[in-house]
Length: 103
Image (cartoon, rainbow, N blue to C red; front, side, top):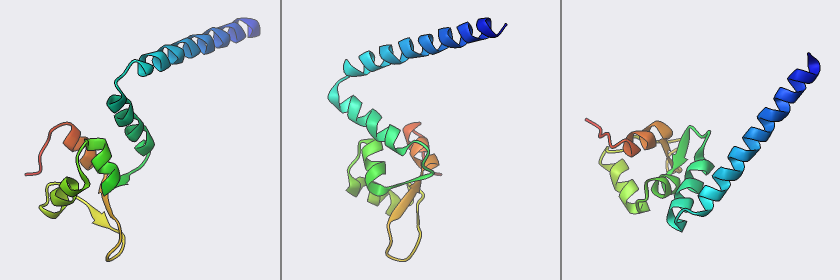
């Protein structure tokens, strides 16, 4: 029984490895701007909030545009202290990617 399970584990690992190799090859075929976008998204994975600069990179917008969106209430944000960095929750970024607007 153990050898069958071991064989199954090896087959699964081999299959995953093959899929990852295919993904790497597919990524190499993407235009540079698309690769940069994917890299920015990956860097923010697991974060609950991002800075204005990170939001601009993810949304392919200028920092000025993101600051305006925050100032006019189009993107929810928060600061940890007065004059500190402004953070935008990832839910807001996801909402914008989906094309949803605030009220």
